[in-house]
Image (cartoon, rainbow, N blue to C red; front, side, top):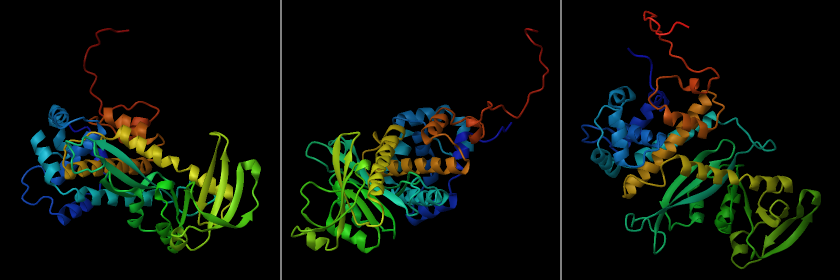
Length: 389
């Protein structure tokens, strides 16, 4: 008797199947494939992410243990390690990259009205990267250093909703500042970046596109003070200046004026110097904007702890990128479901509940209801009681 869909099937039902088919057809992902389609590969890899599977053998054993429930979850083929390994090796990773971008657009639309910084109507982004260390002998293509390999996940995170707006996966040798060339600048948006992205030619490009940036100044910055603004020193502000760059190359790369703000962080007992091209916001607002950059560090910490992106099921560049993009898709999918079902619990709590109840038959929102979920199908009371209390 059918008692409803499993949690896994319910979660996957939020995926836009027609969009996925378009991505598959674009790269001919199912060309000459008789069994184990790209959709089944995505489902199996998503299952591995949601349940913290460690290896291909782990995935195979767990799915075979649930063989009678796989059909209703959309997995029609018998799963073996070799089949999944071949799929990860040969199916174009761009299928899952494009699909993740579609999910990101869906999430951005759902979270469009959310704000965490009441003073601003503009979008606020944090740009940073995280490095995943790899074994040099197993991943020789991921160049990083002479003794080890690595991949970098470059992420532009929307700080209003913690949804990535842009992601690029490269080998570890690619410098962070190069990612600024790949960004499609949003007019009026704020880009909060660390000192690793300080390239005045690229920052001037942001300024020319009518976007704002906030970053920390390097200690060797050569400049000339043009004007000093009044500051409230009780807030920790030391100075607020309009400056022009005086370095031979920097003055050519950035010919306009910049704003330099110096601030004393009493909690950590250190002085911080910020530069920005925005002259309208108050100095304390600029410093508070930079403080919000820690959210992208929490995002990287979350995905490393809760998704399978530190150990990989394959060694090729295609297998690694496939696994990372599907992991990102799972993260964004959970954020979409959380928003649509108005789940108040955190994504961490949501994922923990799902991981231990993946093949249970209960509505998703019932996991967080105050009353325990009970099956709506009642069995007739035609048995005798062993103890009549």
